Amino acid sequence: MFSRALNLLCVPTPPATPPASSRNSQYDTMSHRKVDVDSLGLDDEDYESAALNPAGPPPDVLNAVAAERAAHVANLLARGAVAEALTAALTGDAPYGTDPALAPAKEQSTKAVADVLTTARVADAAQYLPPLSPADRDLLLKYVYKAMAQPQLYNCGALLAWHEKITEVSGVGSIVRVMSDRRVI
Amino acid sequence: MTNPQVLLSLPGPVSAFAFNADRSQVALCPNTNEVHIYALDAGNSWTLTHTLTSHTALVTGIDWAPTTNRLVTCSQDRNGYVWSLDAQTNQWDPALVLLRINRSATHVRWSPKGDKFAVASGAKCVSVCYFDQDNDWWVAKHLKKPLRSTVLRIAWHPNNVLLAAAGADNRARVLSAFIKGLDSKPAPSPWGDRLPFGTICADIGPEGCGWVHDVAFSPDGTALAFVAHDSSFYVYYPATAQVIAVPTTLLPLLGVMWLNDTEVVAVGHDCTPVLFVGNGNGEWRYAGKIDEGKKASTSHGNSALAKFRAMDSRATTQANQDTELTTVHQNSITLIQPYSPTHYVTTGIDGKIVLWHSLDEALKRLALA
Image (cartoon, rainbow over all chains, first blue to last red; front, side, top):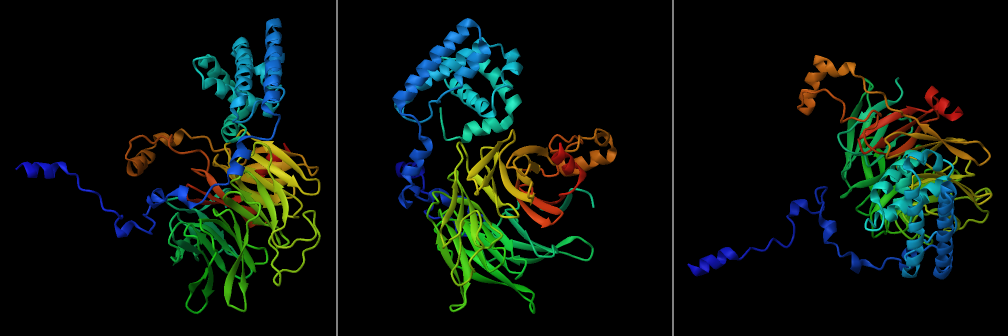
């Protein structure tokens, strides 16, 4: 009786191969999941790294540029020149790349943009956004997403309102460009 | 004939299609491993005449050579077949083409003269195949060198030698597919003079470009248009090595086709063809959607017939149209092809093959605006 109970506890193993009817036919929808991709050959590592880290200034230059830009933007905001602050926050080399040494540049650049967006009134977006070039609006949206990824630091409510205003002007195309562009802030 | 006209409506997506030379037959793949050939019968409706079942996985590319009436198909089973129609038995006979690729084939196109074809594949190469008379066999030569990822689409230049490749490595390339013994030396063009097999005539990678979904040469062959996953339309001029980028507010575009030297139609995830217009001086702009979508008519919603129709097809008593798009295509359009000098045809994930008039008033208004 005890052995029969043990039999109930043992779960039978599933068959090793799928039934013949589902192999090599249009119904064979899962066999690609059993392929060991890693053993099939290396991906082109040079291509991946080059795509994610576009050729640009070295990290220390980018850090310096970001610090200067953040100071300039803070200056303009203190004077109340919001439109100029927005343009200034988007000018200069953006901290693209996955190098950890770029972290200060990314933080300062994102903070500068977030400061401008919280100072500017969302209701006035209609006068701030159209003068920007389409590429600048895409960059602004990248910063909005970057800031929204850190809700403990930035006010996501205001950022979401700005997201809506930017997509009203630039359409879903700009969101697609933020997602597909390999130049990551 | 209303514009646009739905020619066929299949229950599922169409993964590949091709019309024959006089547009009386169409070969398509209904998202399975089969190729179905429909013919236009006397009553002007399309009937299934042949089912070609040599492939064992999804058929990803079909092309029908207008001059030789041969079909070429390629599939995820890493094979290609060239089909010839046997006039006596009215059967299509397959001839296997060993593409020598270790990943799926994605797209196939006959060259303009119909004597060779190119197959794009996920094996980071393009197989250019021609018929070897001595061995009575289709031979494949590989174009590998600059390609770093899956080639999504290819397009032939009118001179039968140059091939454009749209890659998933965010680049569009123009390569030479010159086969010694088959091709005669091409006339000099802005793409290059000496063009042995494998020459890289152009390697275009605009900043921030996403996967390049489709490429197309202009009718005179002096420019290359391509669309990418970053919702942008690009035109490349080899004479000045200049790329014109037109970022759009739309969802990504998946197919592109030139109507003439200054107008390009593109299709994509917005379920409507869109128009791009150039001014002849290398400036291009987005002109608008060709299918704006008819406004939902409220009068139909209350008729008894509409209610019964909804009850029959959707098991609902409300004849609302919330589940239908207002455009003709109900899902993303993936393929666009020329049909005649005045028409083009599109198909997509909704399974409809739709014929569009390229000279109609709406288009003209968009172009001139």
